[in-house]
Image (cartoon, rainbow, N blue to C red):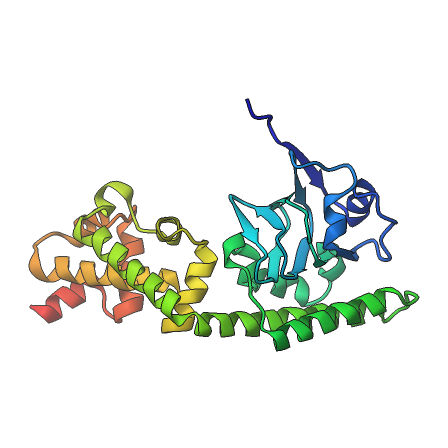
Length: 303
């Protein structure tokens, strides 16, 4: 019988250092740690941790694995992984586990625009198998920024230290956005296959009238069917088509609504309920946003 995993909740970076048997962090709200140090101390393979802060990890090409959510990421190619507060992280197979992780407590950036903007970085919600794979030149940029942050942390803290460190973190995240956009482009074949699967699932949802039993289709529903994270699905679709996953769903929804309005005598309220809306007003609002006509005006213009 397998033993139940022990879950550690770690709210402070100082607490993490203590549990890992590391020296106290050079800054209580920010720390750069070698990945090999993340699998020592008081932890064992039967334990998992939930961090109360952000993690930005560079993993070199190794055979090590990291557990995250429901999957594992093999570091055969190397790359970047981003974790947000509240996510479960595990370490497995520590052989050759090379790289660095930057831990950022939300309090460190809360008085800066980055405190809000970091929540807009979709890659903090990606699954482990959606890691960012770096080219050689990209790797040099990332490692250079890690070195800059490390150098600043080794200096005496003064009134500008936090401003400088926050600036480095912003640059690191901006490069991450750029490199992910490049990855979406260079993996177009895979992503176009995902787009085709998404269209097939959308068509099936409406042609089989699944909405009659399951309600309005959601991004989470299609992401689960495609075995990718909702945020990755939305960002991937936006890179290919300029529209998010939610916008794709709404387009298909409006197509089905137009079909009902033009080929049946169902009332607007009946159509709204058939499509999965709990309130006709919500259906009216979305329909008008997409077509600039109310459902009744569309039916009248069609007739």
